[in-house]
Picture (cartoon, rainbow, N blue to C red):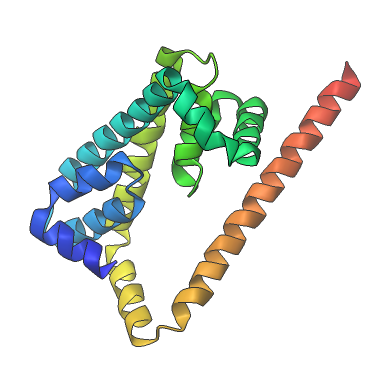
Length: 197
């Protein structure tokens, strides 16, 4: 995180753009904190992160759609991941394009998997734009609003490094629990709708 803040302080919006092409969560978080500190502009940071995130996913979709042979070579080693991505799309519909922005490890995978299907590019672009906008506003705005708390938390972890894995386990466990509950609720709804038919 300190390296990211140093890079952002030195190179600013260029670093934010480049990182946001491939995800950019940490870069946007850092930009929000730096905006809180008065070293960057929040609105510009959100706009840049949104544009880069949208462009990055669009390029991945395009690459996957028009370079299927190379993609299939990659997915030969990751067939489970490909099947999981298709299952997520089938269960959650197009909203997975929005939700994946917030789940580490799914952003690239789901985009590449959707590109291999016959999913409409313009429909993908609309959901991609919506997801990128929500992601940029929530992460950028949230890190700005909670900038003071994030700085204190970071200082605390620097002073007591043993807290970092505990916090990661807590965040990871909470995310896993939430996603497993959401999946169970989705299954129950489907079972109820099938039983009423």
